[in-house]
Image (cartoon, rainbow, N blue to C red):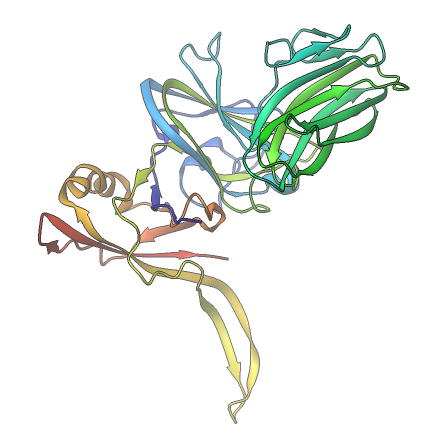
Length: 389
């Protein structure tokens, strides 16, 4: 598993204008708290789905979203990142989501095949007039042998139906019966395929004996590996959502309830362009070590008596060797002048493999230094401090 180049996450479309929330709870939950880069001030809605909208004035680019300091996992709430050219009148593009159930499926399009007398009303109401009716689609390529896949769907209805998943090469398949209820519920089928290659086919199938004639299917996704839950991210840790760079004037964070009825709280929300490091981190770099800050007690004879820990401090020197002067002058220095030197920012030391280890930091009074190296290169050293827990 190759380490990715680090990213500095500081740019934020929520700074372009004044963000507007669809609802805000009474108390100190102002939506402007989302952009202050303080993990101890929050925004909280009063109803879900909830939106936070931003008008950037002109089309501006973004390629990531970061939610930091939140309880989305515990509240069973997902966030969607959306862009629009007309303030969401007709243009409404989903760019990223933390919902592991994936993007809303349009079962009326050609990706999904209707077998027998099955048909779709609208985009997600599935009709199965007769037994052995099914709606299926080819989703993912199976790259190598012994790969485990999970197919999940959030379904509502009455009666029984089956979720089906198979490999197109050898028809190695898995079938799970589902007893539908009026409460939207996530159902999954997980299976390990032995073929060396193939194409994953998934289906909602009314088999002989099944009684469901109409099913509402709200989301669906086939995923390599076992599905851990609704939510992408580690508990309530940093939620990093990269996406293909896109430019919009209007931006929206949409929070949706996947289960339960708890209103979430969010401290920091950023949607912007990540600053990609020019090089990999110089070795050695310690991503996990921490310094304890608190009271440490010993007896008069030196025996340990225990400690009162206030927090775990994060102190590092971010160092890159052989960065180009062009990257420093054109990328890092503008970000330093605009944000990094005087505001907190998020540092992702390995965003592809360890996004849950993103840390909120700030530059120290030492600033940074950039000694020249032969050949038009330099070494960037940036001491930072932060808090892990």
